[in-house]
Length: 223
Image (cartoon, rainbow, N blue to C red; front, side, top):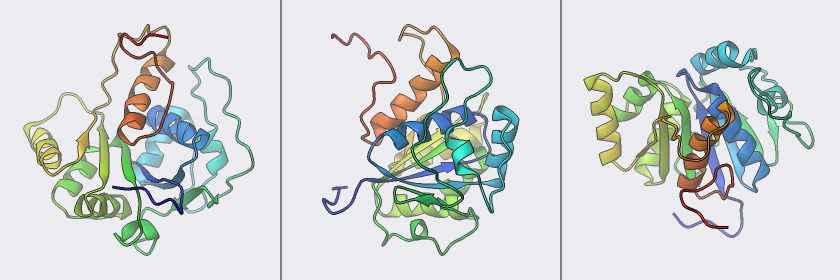
């Protein structure tokens, strides 16, 4: 959809309970470096995965957003992400946090204009809830809003192997206009570190939602 000249691009980011928390954090960092407005929501299962994979405990009622967006995995050789200013528990003028069970937030309504939504990582239950239009939390409701308003919806499942039912859910959503972007990193961009594989997926997500990035070397790209 066309972007309003009176506001920055608005991107909704949802983190659910599939493996792949480093993808979500790197995505938030990339969006923070851009000029977009971010609306974040996290499911309890998503917080559990963050705790397991990033050793970061989040209280979803009073989250330490600074710790989340500056988090660097123990295995990473990258320097700490530098955050200008503090996000606190609710964010700032470009970063907003919404409780996963609060249907009164702006992103639960189609009248609140957004440009895209990314569910990263996307759990099987979230995939199913969106495919059946049976929202049981704000994440699924916001995804349904993007579907009905015909806005870009990018789903990043991370599951293997996949059952027939999961494949059917992905097919149904893709046929309805969602972008299925499984966390399946490529190896053709001169991979040297684990971070390169994370960057590959995040770069592809950013491409889909129209955010410029230089996280990876493009295929046969000339300088």
